[in-house]
Image (cartoon, rainbow, N blue to C red; front, side, top):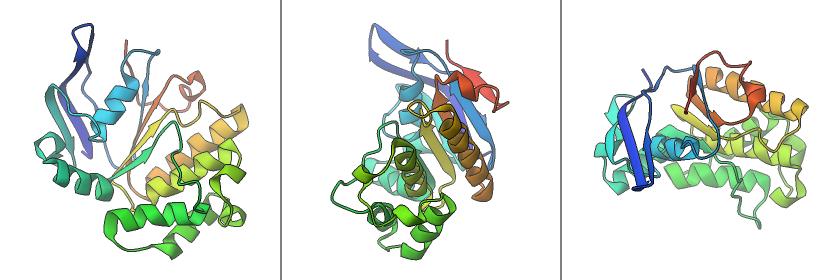
Amino acid sequence: MMLQTKNLTFFYNKDTQFEFPELKCNPSEALLITGNSGKGKTTLLHLLAGLLRPKDGEIIIENIDIISLSEKQLDQFRGKNIGLILQQSHFIASMTVLENVVLASWLATGKKAVQKAEKLLAELDLENQKHKLPSQLSIGQQQRVSIARALINEPKLLLADEPTSSLDDENAFKVADLLEKLSKEYKAALVIVTHDSRLKNKFSNQINLN
């Protein structure tokens, strides 16, 4: 089991409290987490990524309960094991597409994986865009750059927050297909958090937060 959670709870305040169902996801498997706004989807994703600490419970990624790690250990673990695709693509505006992807490898490993970044961008049909600035790309292209950046360190767990919400039907299904294909290729557990009903027919493994 690549990812497993148990008895996970999180409190923002006494009026905003979440108790999450148990999650299980194997390598190369995809898990779709759905639910309306305010049900804690993004909170859950941030907990799985170690960006938030739960009030209680366990988050086990490759046999390590990440809640037991110090902040420094957690940062190192995240860099090596977790790929994050956030709703807003936070690029460094002055750097090219290729430089943004390479930077993710350098931050996690201290090495610049230029060849791997170029291979990933080519696989995502972005070879001709690699020397452009992120602002020169379409939303769909930026989303694919985010995927390349998330995969550069070959994570064990790939987390995607609303990866298709701003895309039209054609690009939404392309991105969903790509995520599924790449998670199998890299043997990563894939967790997609979304309210995009278009994805519900694509993934059989689903949990609804209600």
